[in-house]
Image (cartoon, rainbow, N blue to C red):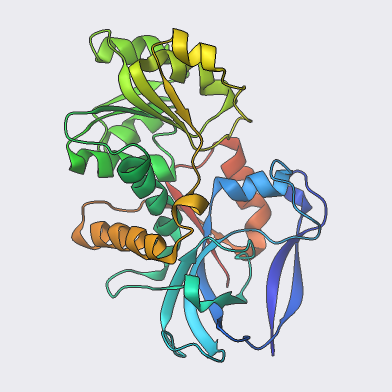
Length: 327
């Protein structure tokens, strides 16, 4: 048994509802290991939970991506030993802690050549890009791809990944600086949502045809622009809602706008099978080690500054990826 510092939310709301407290961590049970965290990933889904967009019974923890070191091994665990560098993305939300127990079956070895901060910053976002662009809509060379929030953590990885696949990556970002960042990370063009008509520019960039796929994590505010950017028989892939849930999509709308497809996938579904989880993570780490993609850790926060971390991410002040350092 040991102790840890943990972030807890007793009532959903704004960032200041997050409280730090000392907790007791039991010895790992069968099939579990105790991990001492060295880096924790910060993701928008953490905001969905904290704000109440994804309802949770109170009190609850935040975060489901981290890297660290195995401190103890439970009965029946054979793939990991004390001292192993490990990482994970997914599972129960409670990564904003200095140490925790975690099921070994969903745990991954952090490869040699990958730093803990890199693992915590890239794994969830990288696996999101993998399933979106390989299994949800298999992107191929020559495809024009419209990707919202192109200067965010997922967006920057998607630009690099898509460029490597030979796709024509078209980003959407807010402001000249963020557009410039996207252009430096694999995007051929980047539409400034603050000053440009997204759909009109998407059509202009594709000779009036529209794009075959839109990857949209913004939600309500970008819904109409995404629909109107698509070519006939195009795919609207909605994988987030930073501005709130998109409106309901009717069959008649999809029919009239060109026999469109609409899907709302999640990483949870695409990595539910442990073999899919490991294969997806392997693709991410392979590309990172080979230099095909790089992770831009543009913000680092102490665990004691978790309220500021959420405020910055929620306000759109951040770019690239952010990590929380436990201390």
